[in-house]
Image 1 (cartoon, rainbow, N blue to C red):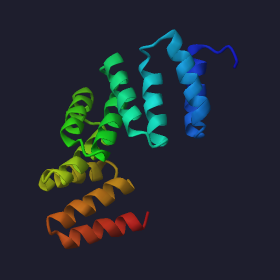
Image 2 (cartoon, rainbow, N blue to C red; image 1 turned 30 degrees about the vertical axis):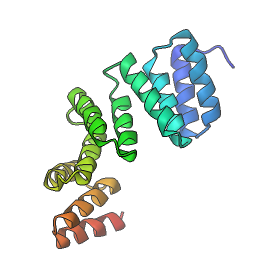
Image 3 (cartoon, rainbow, N blue to C red; image 1 turned 180 degrees about the vertical axis):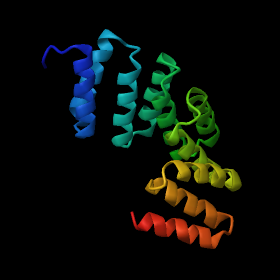
Image 4 (cartoon, rainbow, N blue to C red; image 1 turned 90 degrees about the vertical axis):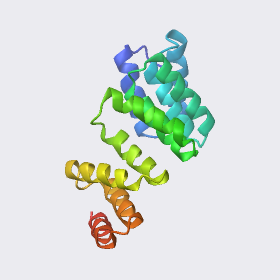
Length: 171
């Protein structure tokens, strides 16, 4: 591979991830980590690759390493929480979301995951509140519309759920 600057390697990795060329992206990550074993970006990318390949365990390991290497890596905290939620590790996911929101309380991705987590842990009114706030910020985000529709349905607000679902369906 070409002799790139660090910015060049990062740009190349970003392009490979966008193109879903995970094998080459993984190779770049391992090469770059040989030079800097605590580079949070490459550790986070390895977590994404593991997750895309369906390996939850390795994804968690890489995201945890990324957050240990840089506790301010909000992306790694958010991605870790998503994998933990998917695996049913809800308390750990909530702790990871707490870390992410401590870094950036306005993070849309972290707040969406927290609202989703609340629907899974019988805190649906809190989820509705978060989803309503998010909807004001990003009215055309399909995941927010689906989430708020589901939350409304769970608390018996049928008409509001239908309206949210219809908005989602017309995007």
